[in-house]
Amino acid sequence: MAAEHAHSYFDDAQGIAYGATMAAFGIAILTHLGMITGQTAGLAILIAYVSGWPFGAVFFVVNLPFYWFGYRRMGLRFTLKTFVAVGALAILSALMPRWISFADLNPAFGAILFGLVSGSALLAIFRHGASLGGIGILALYLQDHTGLRAGKTQLMFDAVLFLVALFVLPWVTVAWSALGALVVNLVIAINHRRDRYVAT
Image (cartoon, rainbow, N blue to C red):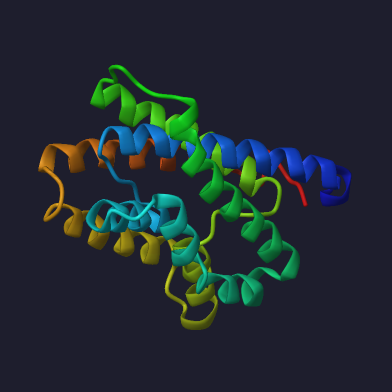
């Protein structure tokens, strides 16, 4: 069945390009509102807020240690595609503020819009055999080698990340950020199902 849905190189390129662009748009929304999200992107945003360093550069560097885990768990093809997706997001997130700006953006709607946009971005990237790196890869690796469920690892990481964020950001901002992260996870959970879509 997987062979029937195999992607060409062009398919993968446009899927990853779409995903990286939408993810960068999501980051533009999030950082405009001063919010964070979960996983590696959230860690990079928090570091960027505290240090003043650009998100794109921080996100690219933070992901570097995880490629080894990706190679061991998913293989070379996945790792190379992920490297391209992460690099594209890093570049596009630096360029996006030059292309768009927000005169007014309601925090509640912004959090939901971020979740919808980022969820669609991740779906596109996942369906083309890549990821945006980070904790998800490590979680799968640990699941294989220790038996600790990947979902629990990701949940624990996000819980610590949002707890730390409370010492940096107003609690209301963290609360809206949690809403955005929830929407992202709901979009993926509802739409990323192997019984509905299989691709290589």
